[in-house]
Image: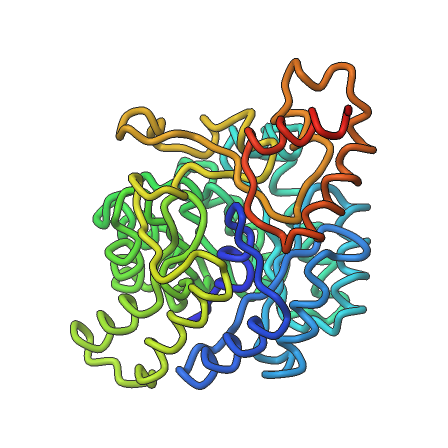
Length: 367
């Protein structure tokens, strides 16, 4: 069992954990019996999540932690691995987009040959430095078998320790998930993990289906907090494993305290509602998700009477602000405005802001 609260939940729009909360959440996760606490994301030097990673390492030790490393090209991977080594990371998860759509968006090539070569290169570089390596299939659930199986096979041949199938865009039924996982567990030497999102309300069912098909790891988040309708919630997965499979390895007594701590630390209030009708279901803080929502959504928010929106606290960037301003930002010194807005956010205690607040702030900045 692994838990991604301090990585996936922490990158939900408007959600930011401090080092103190991260350490306390990690401590309770380990006491519950979670083997790996996934914390932070590294894409290159000076990771913005360094304080979270260091806090978790100090509390539970780097051997109980896993950090995501973004993969785009060889040079970028080398710099990211340097940063991971600096932060004493021992286990990492190489995040690699596998579907044609996501690979085309993030790798500048949708070629399966290029994808497999990149995965081999990244895995070999990481293994040569002594890391325990999980590699992902980002948007793997929508990646056709004839593209996914050779990719996973190539990854294990390169020396990877584990593969994570990411249901980045919820799209599978439990029986479809079971079939997909069986195809992967039949690969020689394959150790498989499932990471599901809850937009269709089936993250727990799909996680259990993957477990039934031979997946040895399930990735969850506390309270199901996460992007795109949330993630597979830790408490529901663990209680299901106990009731349905008689699995008594985990100490469930910490789950209520964990949920309360995560909800308070995330700033979401007393409750988090998963699924497509939640206020946060279609909220984003990355400009690429706002400009290309079709790559991340199974259904449009309008289908369920919801709305797509921007929600952000401190992670303000020039591309994000340009998206928020649209035509209104054509005559604005955006970089200077972002610096001014970041400082204003800090002075006001980092409240969650949306597109309207950014536009109103731009008027104030001009004046």
